[in-house]
Image (cartoon, rainbow, N blue to C red; front, side, top):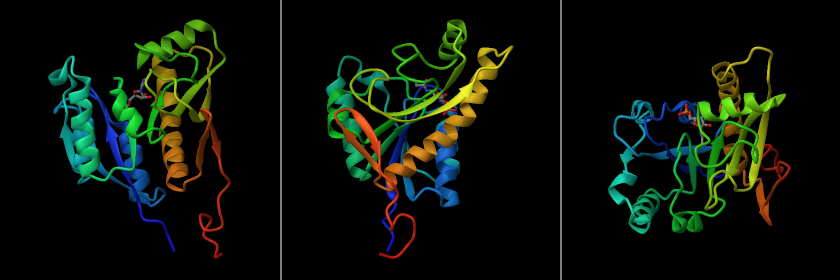
Length: 223
Ligand code: GAR
């Protein structure tokens, strides 16, 4: 007996390139991920990520936070209506740079994931995205960087960490070369984290994540 596919919504913002969304789409298409991406929500219609989703036959919609400036309740209500309509079980932020309204976080507590291109809790927080992160990492003299998949809470980049992939910093690295190496790891890390969620192997206890071992059913053996 297999579990029914996990129902996922992916959220992107701005001109989101959508490579992490692409990795999740491929994870689903290859069968690695027992999931279905039922909806991609963008903040503007011209984001390449939305085109990518449409090409894969996935429903897309735009909810512009600008339209709800100063009305977090209204913005969140609209998101929740969509998430309910599409029966979303897990929200994946993929290049989504904004804070979600608190009532969305509360409704989906430990069911919203984000990917961040550094080893949190270092190099996170407001304004820490894209090239800013990699520049700060290199300027700090760190010997390694990487990416983090974590659950989303009410603040920027502070929720419980699910997993991290480490990437060494090499002599002569620039923010661009480091970003490219980290991005490759992001794609594997995100699929891995969502797979663990789909297999119900992530437990959150007092803000800490525990990864449970595969069960006999998950490893395909008979009970
Ligand atoms: C990724 O590097 C992701 O880690 C980062 O945005 C990029 C989106 O790329 N997110 C953050 O910095 C969040 N603070 P993508 O559109 O190709 O997936």
